[in-house]
Length: 226
Image (cartoon, rainbow, N blue to C red; front, side, top):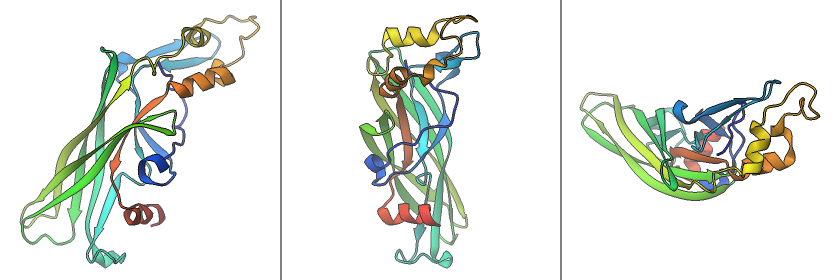
């Protein structure tokens, strides 16, 4: 099972997902029932789980549509949509782990006249080790604005399969992490997560389910530089 260290989410290679390298915004670890907190008794604690972390790559959690499309003036903003309320879930009972993330998309338009439908593409990507794309799926979410309404909301979800064997730590590495240590042991003061061999194994078995809008290069650049 991968270990979720008690620190901020590492940077992942968004180049493989969206064409540029950006950080991840970690949303949630796995469901509490799938977690095991290990305390060595000398201050080293870790959480083990076969489920992936769920995250939104930075700058892909919202999208801005302009009218005209070539303008970037504030007065030309047509629709702004945001991914929110991400709810991860995980089923690890089979040979493959099935990870899902349902979420809401909230949008606001600048002109409330008339009914209007806006469809936005989004992605769900399984990433391994912070830099390797295992699988990517595209979906779309449709927002229906009622006449006279500035706001609309819709629900959507993303999912991915993860090979359980690939997400499972070798037994010797797991034993090194979970073994109880007592004061006076030669390695009592050593955090096992700091050992290069252990860290390498953790990276290989670390998976993330990434959710975000499938942006154009111009949309991504706007989000990154505004």
